[in-house]
Image 1: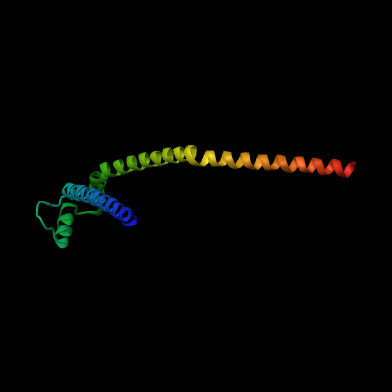
Image 2: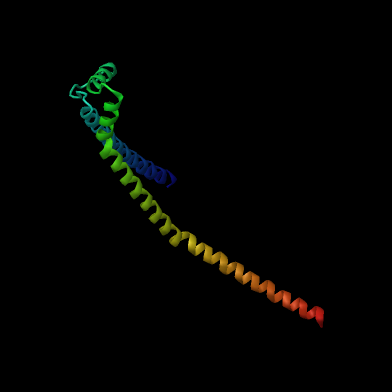
Amino acid sequence: MIQDKVKVQLDQLKKQSEKLQAELSKGLEVAKLEGQRILHEMGVDTSAEKIDLQELVEELRQANPTVRDFLRNLNVATYDNRFRLNWNATMISAYAKQQAEKTYAKDVKPKLAEVRDTVTAQLREVQAKTQELRSKLTA
């Protein structure tokens, strides 16, 4: 019985791992293509299967003879990426806020209300006992 539960959990972990690995591979491929696009816009030929770092630097220097040219081309080549990253960050923060609000409403708020009600009930009991003791002391 315990072995079955462990086996089911291991299978679930394996499926999640495979799903995560597939998503990571997809993300890496997108990043690779985007990097190649940026390099191409900056004057580097990325059609070769394997790019040598020294060749890449030489091509970048030839296509961008001055620092000013390099920065301008880099700015143009990465504009879409920066805009997309800003948009994604905004959406992720909005999603996180929404999830936090849902969690608060679902889990935290009821517990706080329960604690408040418990404390209020205990306080009333203490007040009642205090009144009772006062009345005994004054009588």
